[in-house]
Structure formats: structure tokens, C-alpha cells
Length: 380
Image (cartoon, rainbow, N blue to C red; front, side):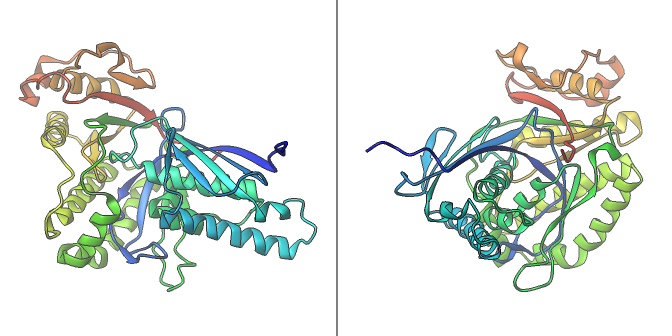
């Protein structure tokens, strides 16, 4: 039988976002509703992105999905929740607009192929980019035009933040149906163009404790997590928003580091404890604090998601010197040429004074595998 042309084929890309006020823990597992609000920075797609293609055809007998070339289980509850929600919205739209040319697509199965240009499941927010991209691509292929916060959130909570550029807040909401648990932009990327991001890739391996399992354990066993959600995060959200609006880098940087540290403290307070940082992560933390102490100012900040890789925030006038400090403390392995990826960073000398202030013997080459230099993404 001759195969029919696909009814629709759409390819979209979505960015990674890095939380500066962390999301950890759900109050509703099925709807993916968080126990606290969170705030993130969306990274530029030139360096980090997920690319997803969705095709619907009458020829397809079942839904299928491939991630980085490998077929995955399409029956995953999160994936099914996304598909169900998009098809529900498409049906709703079709009922409102009878005679819609895309209406026949609803009875068709979909094939989805998704590729990340960065390590997957290594604490670089791959699921956020992945589900944001999935939600957006499926919406396009099925002709859905409504707010996709809820669809993306059902796949991976933080995915709703990847639907916007710049600085993005995911409001925890209060309604039990989650209709008010949505993402919104706090400020566009053009608001703070000097902000730069360095990702120090320590390990590209899949983490031992996945975020979903880790969160559930923390919610069930960590008294510190409950205290954080109720007594700490609301004030931090307000303070972080102020720092962003006023472009107060020292305030932004200190709060980013404190919130990362508190998130990892709640992981240690979980029983049995969860540890996402390794020895190299801790050396990066010490490096940042010594670098700042040397300058007598907070010029660099670290944050770690659920993994050992560090995300560094700084301003464009500090990037070159900090990269030199990283090169000194973590000499490149055999990939000297490919150690720095992404945006161009001019080589800078490391002063003898700073070298002495770091007081760190260089590690065995390869502790930091490579650096990705990037910046924020706009809304385009």
C-alpha cells in the first residue's frame, strides 16, 4: 500500500533554563504542582538546546518517541500526560471551530524525535528543555494555540520556565487544579545584557538519583525542605526579583549561591541522604569564594542543580579572568583546544596575586571536562 503524506510535520527548538531560586518538591505529583515558587534564567539556544520533530500520519499505528537516536518508552506517565493534554486542547479547539483542516489529525498517531546538543540527565536541565520543546512542537502539529505552561509542567515541572526567555518566575499557585501554577517573564534578556553564564561540565554521566525520585523522598522526609518552602522562599523570590530589576549583581550572586547551598542542604537532610555534588563541585565552590574574596566584591556566583556540574553567573568584564582561574585550578585534559566551547572568551593572564589568593594546587587534568560559555536568551 502506498504510504500517505504526513498530515503535519513540525520541528521546534527549546532552551535550557537554570534556576536561581530552586524548585524541589511537589505538592501534587500527578498535576506536577510545586511546594514553592521558583525563578530561573533562560540560556541561549546557540549553546544549549533541545530540537524536537513531531510528525502525524494516518500510516502510524502507534505513538513513538526517540531521544538522542534511541527509542524510549512512549508509555511513560509524564509523556502520556503531555500527549493527553495537547489532544484534549486540540479537541476543544476543533469543537469550537468545526471544519478545522487539522481535525483529522486527532485520530492519527504521532512520532516524535528529540535531540539535545548537551549531556542528558546530568543535571543540566535537559528534561526542562525537552518537555518545553515537546509541548511546543505537539501544540504546533495539532494546531493548539493556548498557554502551554500547564502542558509543559505536566512533563517536567521546570519545563514551563523554558517557554520564555530572560528571567522567568514559575508561580506555585494555590488552586488545587493547578490553573494558577504558571510561568511568567520577570524581565527580558535585554534588561541585563552584560550577564554571562559559564557551565563547568564536571560529569556528563547520568545521575544516581533522578530528580523525580529525589524530590519525592525529600518531601516525605526532610523537615528542612518544608521550612524552606514556607519560611524562606517567599522572601527570597521577592528579593531576587528586586536584584534583577535593579541589576544588583552582588545581591543577585549572593542569593543565587545561598539558595543553591540550601537546596543541596535539603538533599542531605533527606533520609536516606541524597548527594548530587562531588569533590570537583566543592573545589569549584571554594574557587568562587576565594576569587570573590581576592576582589573584595562578589563578582562571580555558582549554582548547582541536581547534579555535579556548576553553572557560573558573572558579568562580561569578569569572564576572561574567571576562565583563567578555572584553567589554572582545573587544567584541561587532552582536549586542550576543545576545553572552552560556545562564546569566544579572550585569553587573559592570571595575576600572581590572584593565583596566590586561590591557594589551590591544580587538580589532575580533566576534573572539569570543558566549559560552555553562554548568555541569556531573549523571547524571540
